[in-house]
Length: 597
Image (cartoon, rainbow, N blue to C red):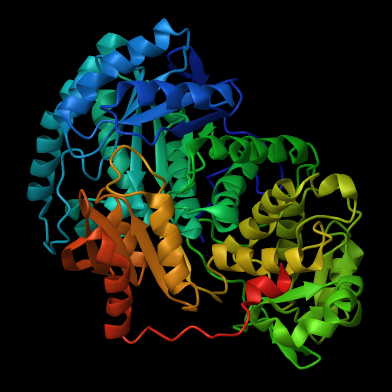
């Protein structure tokens, strides 16, 4: 296991200290609060709509607004958008989002306060070509990148504007893929190559990001980035932008975002965040604010300095190796499924309809499972458990004065790995569990989801949500969001923007209506090709905007059907799923979601 470098301590909250980067009148990093960002969804050539959507975002608390600039023509129109905003007394900083076209970046940098570039496609190709690069060839490629990228660095420096070097897991270049693979390490090295060029020009007003649709990959990439920055030296203290890309919509998207963003915030990583939802952009802002507020509320309830070995590898997921145990015929631990536990009171409320719940049913009742509660700081209790000849089912006491994540990490560090652990979203104190459903959902997803991505946990208990149906649905959706247990169709759906070639919200709804019953099938829904092929490497099938009114269909990362009229595309997707043996006919019975809602 690598030496811990990504945070000061996994048991004590301390926000990572960074330099300040100014984006217009908004400071990122340093002593500034964590900033909230979003992106407008209209066509960038529609000046009035762009101004209107930007003002709407600013009114609900968005502090930085991003606008796509896919062409030089779009980039040039940013001048009119920014002028219109300033004429209407809206001073929110504008970020130009650039993919593929350095010429568009050069134009956009004349008008905005920040430019976002993606190292995977700014000056590189991505054709999934397998090729071995010699050191000399690789160096020549870096020289070509320097030639393409340095003019933008020079212009940003002269204008005093910022930059985001934003790597996406779905759009790593062929060069990076061939040397490092489709890995967090590849994501980090891709960003560092561009950062070194910027530093050679004594330009330091940049921010990093490492976005992915898979929370485990995203978390590992950000941790590895921070670890590498720490190794490179104290002057590599650049701010970090957090985001789970292609999170989707509704409850699932909020859960996935909380797992990825919330877990990193809890470790002190992150200076600005964007929650990417396939919904109207203003819906993203309260979610982002709630994630920040959760960290502000829990960061003071931490362990004092405690020396203990980290109980997981922060850069590579591996489930904690426990022994198997069984309760009432249900096995857990080892390589068994991560189980869902309920309190007796909630079980009693739904006992009459358990046989109709399908995959959403409770599996273990807390009060009858011989679960042992412990304060992880209690040396004698820990020693007693570790001396037991048989594995024990253990959890953290509800009333300990510790935040959830460090408490369970400490338990996993001090308890012998053979003992299975039950994770909880919060203690039974009402103040711990949030005031409304979204708050409770985000808190539970941050706490339980973070620990699942650490490899800790053999069962979960959501006790902050009192409605038994909602608690069960939330439990299973968290397991799905963390990639710990797949029990329904999994969707990767990007947020809309000016590059999108179809209505993402209505299209996603149509695809879900046709495929929601396909348990375990993963479908990617992408508005354009920017991240499409790469993110679909992690999906079974993909539905991607190829041109206005036309859709390309993918199997994995390979396009197999081209230029399908949008009106036919959902039916053709179903046909493609049938061709590959993944289709089943939907049951006529009432859905499990309806049963427990």
